[in-house]
Image 1 (spheres, one colour):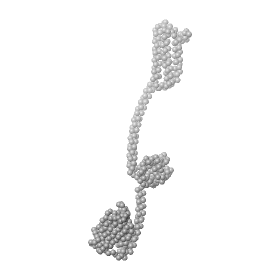
Image 2: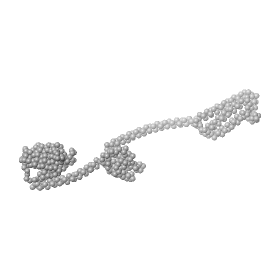
Image 3: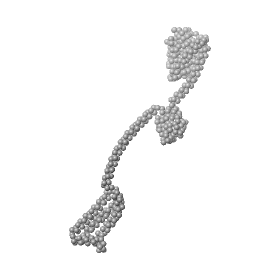
Amino acid sequence: MQQGAMDLFGYASVMAMGMGRATDGSVAALHVISELVTAVACFAAALGIAWYARHRQSMADEYRRVAVLLVTFAVACGVTRIVDLTLVWFPFFWLVGLLEAFTAATTLVAAVALWPKLPGLIALPSSHDLLEANRRLATEETARSDLVVRLQKLNDELEHRVAERTAELAEAKQRFEMALLGSNIAMAQQDRDLRYVWVHNPPEGLSSEMIVGRKALDFMPKVTEQIPDGAKTRVLDTGLPERVEVSMHLERGTRWYDERIEPVVRDGDVVGVVSVAIDITSHKRYEQHLRSLLRELTHRSKNLLAVVQGLARQTAESVDTMPEFTQRFGARLQALSGAHELLVRRSWQGVELQDLVLLEIESDLPPVADRVGISGVREILGPEAAQNIALGLHELMTNALTYGALSTSGGRVDISWDRIRIGDVDLLELRWWESGGPTVTEPNRRGFGRMLIERLVPRAIEGTSELVFAPEGLRWTLRFPIDRLVVDA
């Protein structure tokens, strides 16, 4: 067997080495050195390929397998060279043949595995390519850094603009809230289901927490809720604004609102409504007060016309000539007009009794006003009482100037009033006392003035009248219930 291996693999080589040893020792030494160097080179190459494959982290698995084959091939070559050197001393030719066969097989497998990979290996970048790529990357990095700087500047500018706009919006919102805070305007937004999503400055008695997320029926009476919700449904259907007037019954009473409803449109679709409600309660109350005043004015005008008509008729019956009628009727109208003027000054809420007395003194008795005494606490007469007492005082002063105490230089009139109680009834007593004038006797004829003082005035205010013709001076006492007075207005 040994002989056959020698014949097949290494006989020629062995013979050549033997011949070389026999003929020239220097050639054999050169051969040993070259084989040794080749073996070391093979092992170094194997070690280099193994180190590269181990530290090249991004190497694909198929290239890593080729690297293993190349390492195996290089190690096999190196071992073959070493074994071949031992033949000089140990002629194991069959071992050399096996190693060379293994090396040849490894070489073949490595070549077959490596050949398809050559295009990929060729495509791998060279050092020049890597340098060029690094240069391009550096250029791109510089450009990218410049771009980052520009983007940062743009971002800073954008943030500055956003901050400015945010500040402007905050200021506008603050002005908006301040403008509405002290106003009677409420604003709200609802979605298509008429559920509140936003409320500002809600009506008194309500809060945003009570409204947002709920429907009107959840916190409004049903009758109140139906009016605006019906209009809001139409706005959602038509996209056209509407305006309604609605009353809301709250804890502190009924409030009236003029509500304007506008659609909220997004991308051409109506997605909700915005309502602006203005509290018009004061206007409503003013209208009601005005209507009440008009009704009262109509009623008082009718009463006044009736009084004027009665004055005209009674005055006409008590005089004989037209000039006398004109003088007496005009004076009585003037007294009535003076009472009305005082009523107008106090918005028809009543007249102070003292002002009414002073008015008659200033208009009828300027020369003798210092001979008229006035005393009494502050009392305010209602409109009906003021008109009738003014007529009564006018008749008494006219009589005093013509026939009574003020017709002489020594006469005097004292007018006083206070509250009294008769039984269980509280009354106001008004007194007219004359003194120092001519002796008084009761007249035989009852004129309109006397009838006015004794009957018409007390009847109009549900009181009583007592007229006494005492010799020392005329005395008149008028008593009427204090409900004809009014609280200080």
